[in-house]
Amino acid sequence: MSETVWTFREALKNLDLVEVLFARFHAQLADQGYAAKAGQLVDATFVEVPKQRNTREENALIKEGQVPEAWDKPEAQAKRRQKDTQARWTKKNDEKHYGYKNHINAYEGDKLIQSYCVTHAAVHDSQVFDELLDQTIDEKGHTRVVYADSAYRSEAQEQRLAEAEIASQICEKGTRTKPLTEEQKHSNRTKSKVRARVEHVFGAQAAMGGHWVRTIGLERAKVKIWINEFGLQHEALGAAH
Image (tube, rainbow, N blue to C red):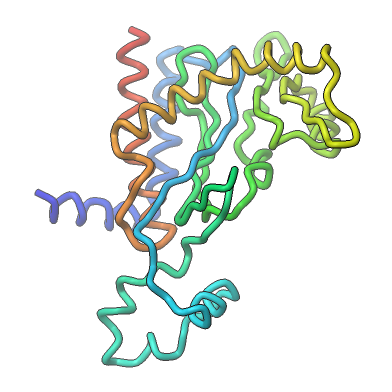
C-alpha cells in the first residue's frame, strides 16, 4: 500500500497537478453555490523534516544554492538521494526548526482552506502574504476583511491593503521605544479572537501528522502537505453540513 501511495504522490508531483486539482475542487464548490463571504485568516506553521547530518562547509554550499561536489560522485548517488538541499533551518521564539513552512488562507466561517503556499522554513510569513490573499469582489462590491498576527503588519502592507480596498484586521505591534497603547492592546485582543480560528486548522493538521514529513525536496513536501489539507477540506465540509 505504501508503494502505491508513493507512486500516486510522485505522479502528482511530476505532472504538476496539485494546484490544478486544488483549483478544480474550489471551482466545484462554487458551482454548488458555495462562496466564502466572511473574513480570511492568514497564518503559517512549520513542517519539520528529518535533520540532515551535514558538515558546516556542506551547509554553507547548500545555502548558496550549490550541491557539494562529493555528493555528485557516482559512489555517492544513494547518499545524494537522501539529502534535502531545499529545506532550511530557522529560529522562532528561541526554538529551532528545520524543514518547510505551510502558509494558508482559511475562511473565517468554516475554516476551509482557500489558498496555501509551501516554502522553506526560513521564508518570513509576510513574504507570501499577498500571494495568499483573496481579492475577489462580491456582489455588493466588497472584498473580504483579512485577519493576521502582527508578523504580517507593516506600513507598506497596510498601504497595499488600502489600495486593494481590503479591510485590515492585522494585529498591531509595539516596539521597545513605542509600546502599544491600552486601546491598541484591546483592539489586538478583539482581532485575535477571530484570527485564532486558524489555529484550529493547524491543530487538526498536527493531529493528522501534517506537521512532519519524511519526503525529500520542496515539491514532494508540497504534495504531501496538500494531500493532508485536502483531507481537512472534506472534514470541514462534513462538519458544515
